[in-house]
Length: 154
Image (cartoon, rainbow, N blue to C red; front, side, top):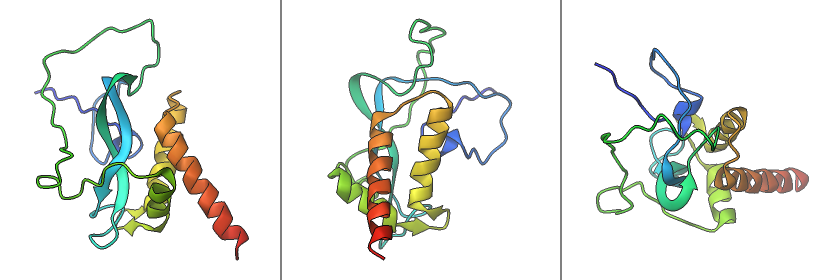
């Protein structure tokens, strides 16, 4: 049986399972956003971290290496989407001001390590693929700015 997994967050740099082949792909009409809470890896139930989830956003590409090469396209696949409905997804945090998200990321830490490591690893992995994800970059820069301010206050 063949199964493809689209890794849009930590699976890009930390797979955690054996795989036979890695292919860079994209999802048309979606973008990464730091709206999903993490209470089991990058945060705790009392202080959740923020991780990326996919949000429908017409005209966006989650990643595309060569805009002239839109093939091969895979259609008719099974997709599991996280719900923004907090009744069914208790860890969904949703949008927040950039500075608020950055502060939450700076202070959150879980069994997989500090939440700030997650964002910096994700940003680095995307950059290595040639993907400049505006939201990831903006949140990472907001985290850096606050960390620098905290360091100069010492």
